[in-house]
Amino acid sequence: LKKEIWENFEKIEDFSQLENFRIKYLGKKGKITSFLKLLKELPLEEKKYLGKELNELKDLLEEKLKEKEREILFREEDKDLGLDLTLPGRSPFIGTLHPLTQVIDELCEIFSRLGFEIVTGPEIETEYYNFTALNIPEWHPARDMQATFYLKNGALLRTHTSPMQIRAMLERKPPLRIVAPGKVYRCDADIRHSPMFHQIEGLMVDKDVSFSDLKGILTYFAREIFGEKTKVRFRPSYFPFTEPSLEMDIECVICKGKGCKVCGEAGWLEILGAGMVHPEVFKAVNYDTELWQGFAFGLGIERIAMIKYGIDDIRMFFENHLFFLQSFK
Ligand code: FA5
Image (tube, rainbow, N blue to C red; front, side):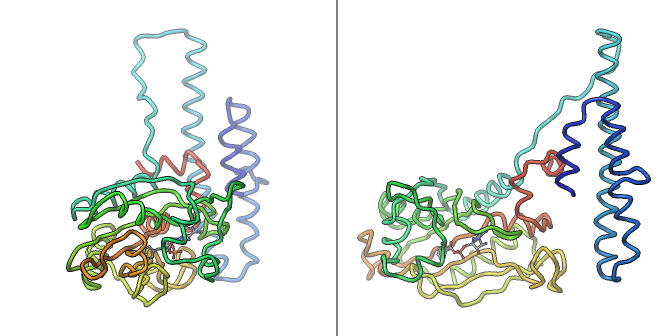
């Protein structure tokens, strides 16, 4: 319903369309009004939840309709009166940075302060960079962990930003510290998964880097982006390119760990995978494993934005509704 409403809303151009729209959704027999009437018959929990959603939608819609009415009025006046230099000026429509761009910028800023260099690389990758050099040979079941879009010529859409670890290490000599933001692709989609999403890869290689440095940096970043009191949780995990490996969860800011729609009732949201660089990965780039150690991490940007702004459906980021984008001024 929301989608239909906002799509039709964008189409309104004059007063009669505005009135028809109002009748269709907010009138006595309008869709929202009838839904509100139906609430009586629902069980208490659903009534509470849907009631809140519907009323919020109704309020927002009423406000937006008022704005639209003014906009049309101004336009009609222009037509009637021609140019009137004595009218007060109207402020121009100012765009905003996409919420995901804002999160990426903020993350890059935090990691630059820690001495990480920002690098980018191709979204179309070879199997070598995306899998093989990361210690995932062809027969390895881990290839199935990430449902891959293959292209006709044997190339693929990168399933994670981790190939940037290999590219960065081949282009540089250690010690190094890089972060690599960008788009990645996997064939899965629901309210928490999207076939295209964003990650930031992080990699630090030096002579004396430990697992506790990794945990320290990750905790620091989480507190910078979500606030001092943010609760984080580390769980042991498995990635072929790191050993040992971990995953980090953030306590859901919406329900404070109780469980809600944003976190899929879990109370926590997984935002990243990380670990100590696997010796096989160092071998693939000819780094001396006796001399160098490192850690790497891969963050899911949408997850971070969902927690930060309390958004419960990942698809909102890609539907480009103006009312949604405008709320990130
Ligand atoms: C990886 O992609 C590893 N490359 C991360 C890594 C890097 C581990 C370096 C060790 C060292 P994973 O598949 O768990 O791991 O994805 C990482 C994060 O991306 C997840 O925590 C989640 O926040 C996000 N993510 C994964 N799949 C999706 C999806 N379909 N939609 C949105 N976000 C996703």
